[in-house]
Length: 151
Ligand code: HEC
Image 1 (cartoon, rainbow, N blue to C red):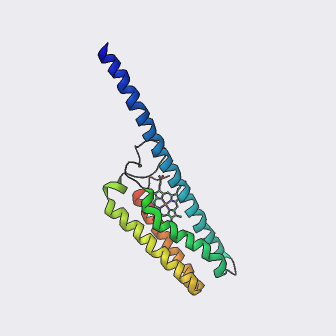
Image 2 (cartoon, helix red, strand yellow):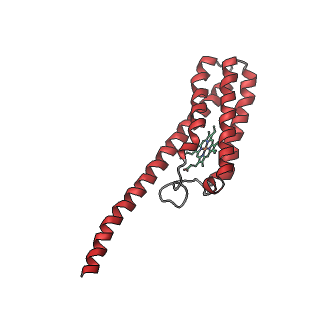
Image 3 (cartoon, protein in one colour):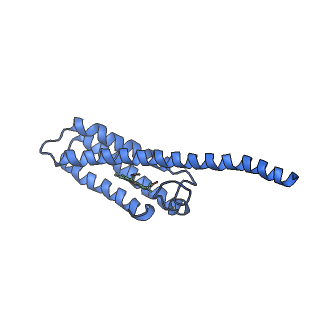
């Protein structure tokens, strides 16, 4: 009697914690997904603008600034325990945490190249900008190849 009472009490104590923890993980994953979608939208807009005949620095600037800001913030979107197998929807591979140095390097090279892109747009040489956009695109692809589950 006493032990089943404690089991109930224990369950009451534990289950809310688990579900809170899981909804916390889902919130982290949803926020991360929203960040990546916004990043993807800005980067796509940059690519589309560059395909036009005339592209202005003024149009490009807010988009490349957005890409650079999100690139710097990216490592903070991956708290421990928010990857595959933590519940919820995610394509974040465990390697993000087991190979943390590799992930940091991938994120850093993205941030460095995105910062350079912003500098080049400010300088206004559009052929350099077009080359740099390709370089930034490769940093996205490199990280996805190692750290994201294939679609
Ligand atoms: C350092 C690693 C890294 C870099 C750099 C990176 N990504 Fe990702 N990206 C990820 C991971 C990991 C996921 C999967 C996240 C998840 O599912 O929780 C992802 C997911 C995405 C998604 C899917 C979002 C969704 O939920 O639908 C898009 C879109 C995306 N990235 C675009 C980009 C673009 C565009 C760039 C470059 C401009 C980029 N990423 C750079 C690691 C990276």
